[in-house]
Length: 337
Image 1 (cartoon, rainbow, N blue to C red):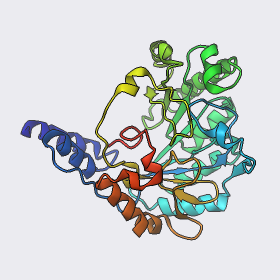
Image 2: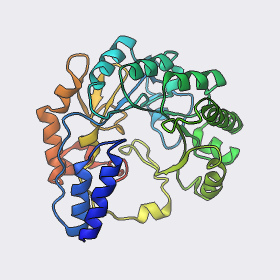
Image 3: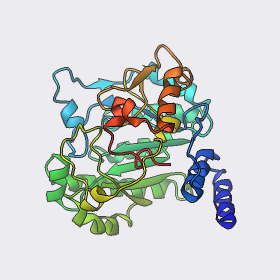
């Protein structure tokens, strides 16, 4: 036991040069190993901030609620105001080791100011910037702009190996997969050409596993490991049951795990295009708005009585008392420690 404890602490210390000492991971480890009560403590400020440069997407993925939300009569394509963005960045640039993820419920590349946004964040000293895209409009020019803006990590969500499966999952013509593959490979090669010695610039290719594409997972990994720094397989989510059909693989459906407090409440915030701060990134309908960053600082909202109340309910495992959490099927995945 002591030897394992020593190894765990050494791993944390070694990782400190690129991250932070996460005492909650240590508490989680003690809980798993010796059964102590898992009672996490909140950081003074969030470690990850998701922003929404644009609320619009050109795909209708089966694992994403966008097609459901965008069909509502009140939906309209919306962009984050650059002055609001700068206000947020000016504050989070003071946070220690914060990760900025400038995407949320849309395809961020549709915002024509995206590269300028990333450059502004870099100029303010934010070290870790992680962007997600579906890759369909990742042109050579956009790739160059993103790399030159200072983007650290790009994740391209492809989710299929064949055009037929791509069409079923993405809700678009399967031939678009050819463009996505071309764009992604060109980005990888350009990154390695322009920044051969920069280990901070990474490309991840991801695959949301479901019953529809699970047979292609191995072929997907085998191919993309040659054209990325990492291939990531993610679980299927129903986003608070917004997605009615559970397409998780049979293995995932059968898994039974202990439900622990969700780390999102202690680590992350999501801010939409108009400044609403949500406590959960899977909350597509804005049911968990904690405040507006137009009127308050992120710190004020993060340390508010309401946030503390939600954390306390999670620590006491009273998940059913929070409407969004009571119907969540993604605990210990998105909210894992």
